[in-house]
Image (cartoon, rainbow, N blue to C red; front, top):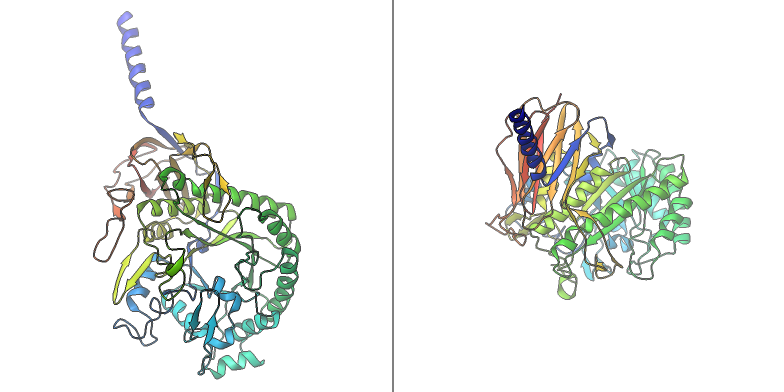
Length: 519
């Protein structure tokens, strides 16, 4: 009897030590569905800024240019990202952009006032639509509600979406485009609350102008989706809450999305503060979610994070003005932050239905060119991994992870109020169920430590091998460059028979994705 008791106690002690040896737990319940993941959260953004368009997407002088002047290597890289939706032509650029300058055989050069350069207008509406068709992305146009008029906005919709008859539809046909472009998504201006914006408006004045533009635009093309300019100004003294509440109340019944913007940076070279910045995005999402629910619009309104990225190195002097503006070089920690943003979109799939990384090529971008060479930046890989795999229904995941606190009053950016986030989990986890396919993404924020974790499927079990993908690099400052890829997605060994539960050690500063069938 005593031997049995001793053996039983030893077994219990051994099991207890095994469980305690795991640093964290992840529980997946396939019944706990948040909402359908919209493919448009894997969008991007093209602005007439620096070398994004000229010298990036469009470069007729390149040996790699096709018959339309588009770089074929850039097109291939964009296709690899599965970019669902691309916002165009700005950005700050759009608030002094007149679309008629960029159509037809005689283009009108203009002083581009947002980024202080000459805009040739060689690349415009019809060229962008041709580009979008080649890479398989859906266009999303933003209209000029800064220096532009509501009639100008309406006429652009007419040019793009009306088959024949009225003046601007016939103008498109005259210019060689018989069929309409059928642009579905239209933004009502850009960052109209910012004092850096040409034609800045108060919230009340923006509502008046945007509402009248919406009437004209939707009367011209009834099925379009309209995106209002939410607050992008979080500097000291700004009131983003008043702005967003005013827009949601005043444009109720007219809009389908409210656009939010967020850029972050590692300003103090504090890794852990930087890796926590996506939690601020999560908090802002919840605040705007509450505002949307309060309004109870007859037309559902969703959140569009239609500008987001890491951007802090190339922000001043020659890095902002000129043809080589905002050419940020990214490292591994930047890719980890981007993963945190993507996890935020997936985790809030019921309300976040659009997101656009800013921007696509060269300018704070995942794709970088120089001459006829090209390389993929570190931030390319998380976006590619998510867009290729994280689809279906988002799941509410239980995570029990060690955590840390950020430095009191750390700053997200040089124009944003400081913040303080407590209990930042080292493991940031999302999951998606698409039919019988389960995908789990785990970001390990820990700088030095692998985190051994029990992963448990509370309903069902993996019916076969599970694919494992990892994004990592030699250290957190690892960058990619021409002919040098230090950070990328690597296919690891499959989990052969994980069943309903398995233990996995997530490497330090890594992204891991599991993909397998469950029943």
